[in-house]
Image (cartoon, rainbow, N blue to C red; front, side):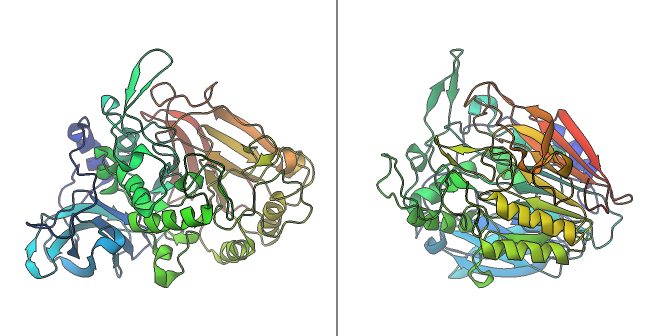
Amino acid sequence: MAQGSGGGFGRRSLLQGAAAGSVALALPTLSCAAPAQARSGRPSADWGVQVGDVTTSSGLVWVRSDRPARMVVQTAATESFRRARSWRGPVIGPDTDFTGLTSLHGLPSGEQIHYRVLLADPDDPRRTGEPVSGTFRTAPTGRRADLRFHWSGDLAGQGWGINPDRGGYRIYEDMRRRNPDFFLCSGDNIYADSPIPERVTLPDGRVWRNVTTEEKSKVAETLAEFRGAFRYNLLDDHLRRFNAQVPTITQWDDHEVHNNWYPGQLLDDDRYTEKDTDVLSARSLRAFSEYFPIRTLRPDRGGRVYRVVRHGPLLDVFVLDMRRYRNANSPGRQTDDPQGILGAEQLRWLKRELSRSQAVWKVIASDMPLGLVVPDGKTDFEAVAQGDPGAPLGRELQMAELLRHIKHDRITGTVWLTTDVHYTSAQHYAPERAAFKDFEPFWEFVSGPLNAGGFQALKLDGTFGPAQPFIKAPDRANTSPAESPQYFGEVDIDGGSGELTVRLRQEGGQVLFSKVLQPGRVGQ
């Protein structure tokens, strides 16, 4: 990890140090099996550390042990850990797959926080393993500080896993070098329905090799298999290094369970013994809550994915859950659809929290796009749009209600970010081009995948008047990461002017498209 001097990690010192500190990925040495409940020696945290849902004064630290252990977190202003503050965490064990969370609060705003996690023998606190260190920046309370974050999604999809010949998930190193304040993962953190084979022959004859594990050799059905799918990605050195430096805001989408799933669905998939998606999604959500630091997934916080993460006066991030509350996928021609894709309760929450927000920018983190026609089979549709360019129907009715609310309540600074479709694009929505006109213009940006198959561009639905000034997508389905670039998006907010700049980048960091948005406007 690149290190600054004295007071911590500055952006310049991180960028300089990253070039010297980057190393190629070797085959992972971590054990892929679940820890034994009783082992000799001291506890170990080889799976790294993470911090999630960071605010101006708080953060949630994650770790995984190789055996039962007491989690202890120490925080300090410098990496010397002089005058460190200690946080006594839980005893972690098999009930959470040996993962644990410790909440930090009362942190100084706008500061680099150095932390380290100690795992202690529950019966002898003097027996501790080697500490695992990380760092993150809390959000500022003032408007003068600049802000940067990245977003993307779709990891280990379509059988394209950790390839040691390519250096693994090297896109995480591209993002880490740019030192964002946080990373927004827009979903499909795992592909529970996509096993990882040892090798795949590409169309040009090259061979793609994967790191494999027992749990990823089949579709995930049991809780142990879902846990193993979430563990798989942590075998990657780049991802663990990224997690130790960049806090996350994480949401989920369909592949955490099964392609295009919805509540109440019974799978028509011969690979599955358990075909009830309600059973599978409950197991996945439990593993998801164990492997990501998300405040609202804690039992005392309601056990939900949707939430707002407030990142100082410049930014609120509204994280949606378009999976657990949606109705069944259908042709989407209903003239009345109160449930829609969000469910009535989540829609009320979103309207209320958007109206309450005092942030300059309100990013709506949507796990599915609004105006792209995403099919599910021959007659049904998976996202909001259904290809009819006329007045809103089906799930579009709920989005029309939300967009009308944003206009009439004069909510400024809304920007939509998503992933899902495995290419990158920019859509501008405007009432003068739309069948439904009672809304103000807005932008939606798409970026992904992180490490999955690339897919062709989808059609636009004219109901909300989208225009597409930029798109980059492959010309055939499921192109491997060796054939088609992987993508991430970058958002910079200027602390002085309040301007928000979106850049769509591809693996390696090249900027493909950029757009500057002005603050204080209902529409753009």
